[in-house]
Image 1 (cartoon, rainbow, N blue to C red):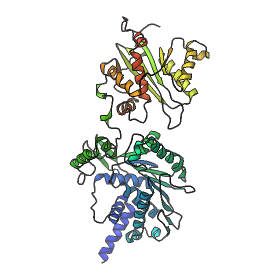
Image 2 (cartoon, rainbow, N blue to C red; image 1 turned 180 degrees about the vertical axis):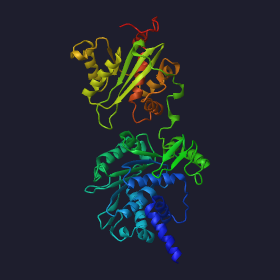
Image 3 (cartoon, one colour; image 1 turned 45 degrees about the vertical axis):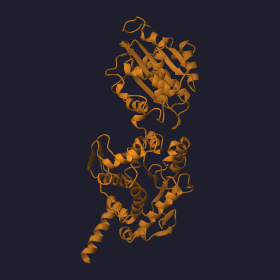
Image 4 (tube, helix red, strand yellow; image 1 turned 60 degrees about the vertical axis):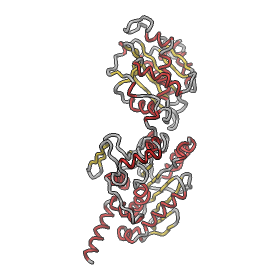
Length: 490
């Protein structure tokens, strides 16, 4: 009996110290007949969550397939562990529906009422003063409160927000529902943190759409992103706080015993490629939906000097505002060199009009542009007017640019038709992209997933230029009517 007691005390001490051990015990409490597959990803997931509990990570985004322990670990075990260590902590747990939130709360309360939990964290277990369907509260004013998308949290503040799949799969196709989720996060949940600098946020999601909450948080920045696709599509490394390094090779699966590659292929066949790519591979915009075949695009290696370029043209697609959810204003700079238009630079910014005008003027002067193309829409209309005054030397003297023509562009066909009709210019070498550039990965991603991407401003700027480049003015700028390949005099 003494030996048994020693073992129990050792296990309890391990539960207090090691979050993964605690998670495994919670799992067996909630599902005593099923065996937990102890795959390496569980150690990775638990380590990242424990770093949040210790305050080492303030913002954590986890993207992971369904039925991979995310709710047990993040929504049930983590609040129980955090409150066990400090019964004054205040935790808000949010999911997409009231019923689901209450189900998770019931499982959490089940764990908190177990005998083993009372031995692991006796102070917390004996200090529970309120236990309802939505809230468990301690004598130290700590709590775990369950709520849902749009639920009332007025007057409540938390030290930790845990967001567990804030959107149903069917709702992800609705722009209205996606905006609702993003607004609820930005306008309601963020304001619930008691301490905006020290409070922590965990968003644990499966990808449903390019513009879902996970995509929105990645756009905002500031989150540590733990991405766990069911099948590794490239080598991945995960360095834990313990110093251990996990490496996944291409083709490695998260749960090799219960979800091997053959089982995942069967799931893919049943639910369809795009849905599988989103929910299991955390890639909501699979490459097979692309209008552009990226591998066919012609490239160049070394960017020529400005004096070696025959002509420089900038193409601007402008937006209305500088808010976090506004479209971007994008300017691409193209130079004609030895028979091809080379994409030299790309600017992608959110600016109010006065700052946008200053940015366009700066880029014009930096590149000594010959032509600026601007879509005649939104802020493009006043931009064309101001650039026209610069060209005619009617503006302030420092902005005079008599050598730079500005041209307004009015699209005659839709965005998809424009890109499809101009793709051949990129395949033939008429226009080339650089092999490397700091802005190239984001451009590649947007072009590949278009028209399913969250934003299409880079695509619009590129297709606007390509369409212009084969017209009469574009042919004149490239000197295709008999001029040699040397720089064109101005």
